[in-house]
Amino acid sequence: KAGVTQTPRYLIKTRGQQVTLSCSPISGHRSVSWYQQTPGQGLQFLFEYFSETQRNKGNFPGRFSGRQFSNSRSEMNVSTLELGDSALYLCASSVTGTGLNEQFFGPGTRLTVL
Amino acid sequence: TQLLEQSPQFLSIQEGENLTVYCNSSSVFSSLQWYRQEPGEGPVLLVTVVTGGEVKKLKRLTFQFGDARKDSSLHITAAQPGDTGLYLCAGASGNTGKLIFGQGTTLQVKP
Image (tube, rainbow over the protein chains, first blue to last red):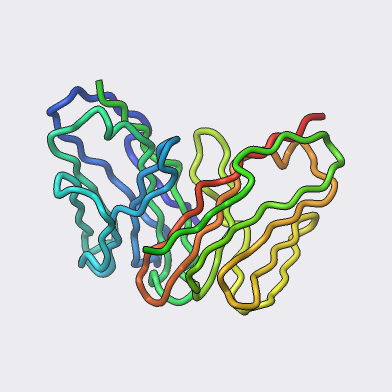
C-alpha cells in the first residue's frame, strides 16, 4: 500500500506570495491533518479534514487555509507569506481521525520564505 | 490548553547504554502515540498506547502509559546507532482528529 505523498518536497517563495501544497493520503484513509514543524515550536496542528469538511482547526491566522477533495486528497494554501512561515509542512492521514487516531505522515514539504 | 512536556530535549549516549524519555501532561488523553522522525522525513508511528498502565514492547523499546493516562515513557535498552533520531510523543483527545505533540527528544547514539 502506497504511503502518504506530498508535493512539492521543496519550495522557495518570497514574502507576500502565496503557496499551495498538496497531499495524497493512504488509500482508504478519509481523514487528513496538516501540521507545521519548526525548530522553535515543534509540531503544531493546523487543521483536519474529513469527508471534504474541515472538522478541526488549530490556532493559526486565516492566511492558512485548506480543502479536501472527494478522493480525500487535500491541499493547503498560505497567502501573503511571511518570513516566519518558513517551516516543514507535514500532512498525515488516518482512517477516520477518531478513536485511536493513528496518523501516518508524509515526508513533508520544506517551505522557505525569503 | 492541552500540553505535552517531553524530557530530556537532547540526549547523546554511547552505543549499548540504556535511556528513558518522558512525556508528561496535566491533561488526560484517550491514547498516546510515539513517533520517530529522521532528518528530511516525516514522523513514523512506533506504537499507540490506550489503556492506563499499559506496557508495550517493540524489540528493545518499551513504552508505558501512566495509570491516569496523563503521562508516558519510552525506554530503550542497549541503544544502537540506528536508534538515532527525533522521538515525539503525541496525545489524542476524544474524537477531535487532532494530535498534541511534545517538543521532541533528539537522541544521538555514538558507536
